[in-house]
Image (cartoon, rainbow, N blue to C red; front, side, top):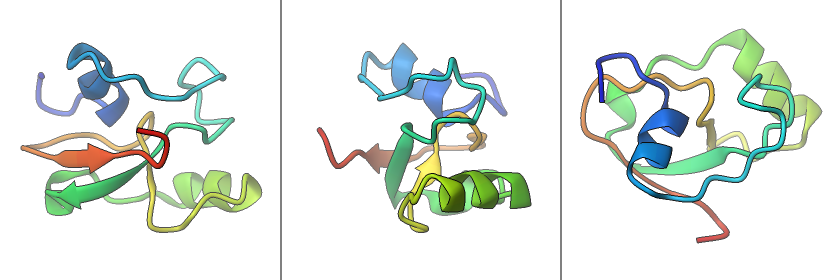
Length: 81
């Protein structure tokens, strides 16, 4: 993936199904993924991402794949995989 691509783009390119319904606009928060390894290579969580997760009652440990930018190798999972 190109440097700075979203975690959602990376997952889709890898052929992994990621729940989403808002078109990656950061509204639905269905794309929350648990980071297993490599959390330090993701972009920092923004206040906007935190608000979206709170509004949608998403586990604070999850990252929104449509908002997190990848800057290295990451291992992620979803509760529905």
